[in-house]
Amino acid sequence: MSAGKIIFINGTSSSGKSTILHAIQNSQEDVYLECGIDKFIWMMPERYLDRPLWNDVLGLANKAGAAGHQLVRGMHQGIKALSLAGCNVLADHVLVDPDWARECAVLFSSLPAYLVGVNCPIEILEERERNRKNRTLGQAGLQLPHIHKFSIYDVEVDSSQQSIEDCVNSILSCVAQPPTGLRKMLKML
Image (cartoon, rainbow, N blue to C red; front, side, top):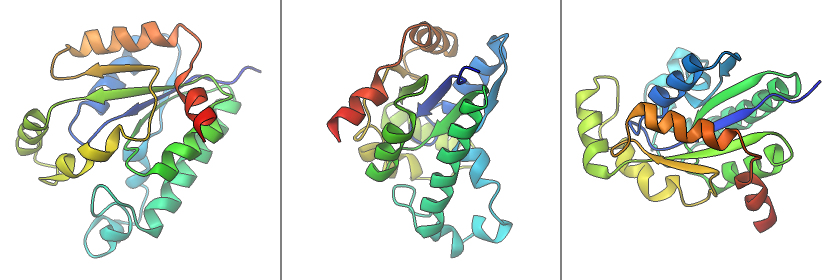
């Protein structure tokens, strides 16, 4: 059995990751499972989704506590297991921690795993945060200095300059080629 493809979509909160993920998922005949940070966060007990326990998960948006690190390690292991079982996976991520990026390089560099960077300027991120009623204001700004710092991408898109369709087409064109980003990251460790 061949390993399933993994597409990690990394960007700040409100950068358009989920919109791009769902557009990819809906455009493909092959099944892609949505298995990213948002799904895993909502697996947490409800009490962890509010302060003060939220601070132990991703409360500062750019730095995780012990529960957040454990959650991301579990997410990575789950994604790897799904791929090895032949499932294709789409995963939104916030690679704000160098350990998370290193772990992705180690776990996924030998698999058909692609790392996609989603860019968006702070002014648009802040506007999107204000317009969305379910976001913490300032979260994207805290993540922005760190989000792309630890990654080498197979492809990058800009959700402020490209339509969702253009973002999807760029990503799918990349996925038609062998992945390189995580392998390059592994060599740098």
